[in-house]
Image (cartoon, rainbow, N blue to C red; front, side, top):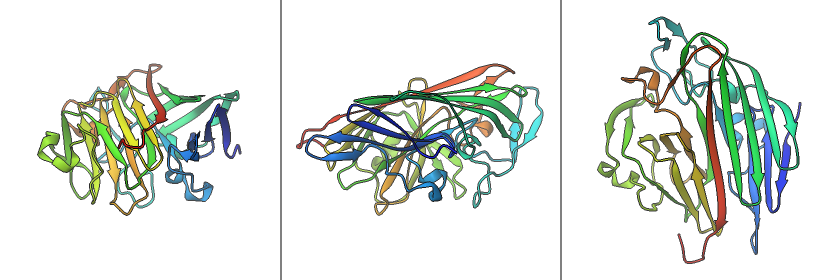
Length: 298
């Protein structure tokens, strides 16, 4: 058991949780005049499980899969069973539920490996590299198919502090509405939902949001004037962003850079998924960078 693995670089502190899906326990930076400020939601501790972390790694798929399974390129159907208590559908793959091993570690860098990824028909190995600098965190997640040819995907599931002044800013060309099972129903332009159009910096909606935004350009910003911080997000090649928060009473929200929309395995053309032959790999990258935010900004 590795517990919490701490990396440091200048004023930045990163906690990694190898035993809890290899995810990020916490990420904070010492801001002048403010002390240690959380970039990600502070860790609730091991007893809170994977969704008490600051960020989860998602492989070999993101979010929910309907229909009981996935279909390979040969037309063969492969069952995938639900993998999380309280969820009737399989969700987020299994990487976030498994212990990872620490393969390398320095003061500011760690490489973790997962040798036995296995959910439904998926068999894969994965590697996660965390590289911390005084002003940012680079994360690389790579999965290698060790089973039959199948459509792979994944991404990153950060949990950010939701504060009174929080503003989210990113561009997207479309978004999926969801049904009561949190599955996509209709694809519309964000402009049709003004409270969900983040093309200019905007507060999160007061009520529920749990929607996949498509045509995302891989760039986003979170303004946190209550913390005196601006956070920039870069996820090259990840064309979908999922925004989730229960309501304005929640102390968190999620902005999830992922490779594909919810239930992409059952959408026409399987958008964003990558068909991996045995031995082929899929690499996903995320950068979080922070800077002081002028007091008048927001």
